[in-house]
Length: 406
Image 1 (cartoon, rainbow, N blue to C red):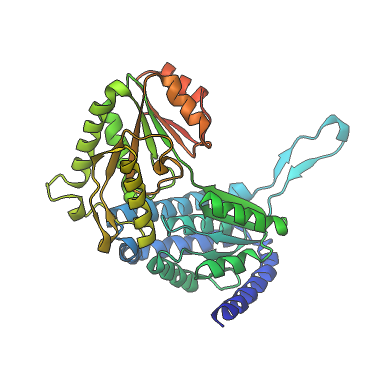
Image 2: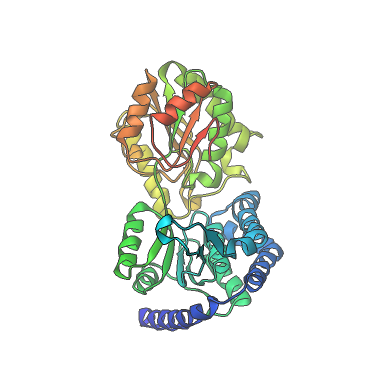
């Protein structure tokens, strides 16, 4: 019965938005900017509510929420407000000789009705930043927040209901059934952030209606430490980006490749960086106000299983390993002597576990990266631009960043 009620609600809102999307085609820049200003101001006024909701979901530190959730949304809204009039202008373009005597221009228009399926790891940012884009483009929007972060999901629903009519923006809460019902509708565009496995399902669903998609998926992001790298600097940057949001970041460093002769020194620097970040008072990471928790019990158990399997098959626990089940707490954990056939090297980790693999020759490390599925991001540390260029030329990835991460 609950699914039937949900289906009725989705059908009703979809039809309302499909009709209203035709009106949105003629909306002006000033009208769209007005919507964005309202959203921007609401977020600014409700910063504390957003931080409390995310802390309730998985003890996300307030400062982290400010930096990774609230600031990106405010920045995106301000940038869009500044640029939108120019973006919407018709652009004159030259015509080829074959159309001599004609004039041509590009006229930008809304895609129509859109669906945003947001993930749980950055549940506010990755729901509302795409909303900024959809509204600025003149689209109607249905948002499906993650059921794994119910407090944040409820807050997003409250925000949308206070700001917009449901024929423009609406929030549909729920789990798998809600996603399946939404994906059965012929949206003009679907924006999905999540795992590659679910991304394939989204893409297949969109193809049934010839709808377009934006898929922001996961993947393992390696770090290559060259023999001449500044190990202390690399360790500090890797630790600060790996363990923010408790490692639950799509572009977090997923594993590190380091010269065998430098492995122990690098691990020592990494351990010191973790202590400085999360236990400078010696109280332990579990007492830190700057370290969050795993989102739920299922992911907590999954991560512990990865550690157990790796150690059982020869990996060494070089740091961490402590967990508190009732809090879904796993402290920053460093694994050395990791082999490519271990479970921790199969899929994106999405948690505070960092495998360290050593190599003898830089080409061995790059060949290993090239054997794996294409990295979502690639990070390389070296003092030599020539060496960095060599690493990036010999590999293929999403963003490639030198001497930094994320």
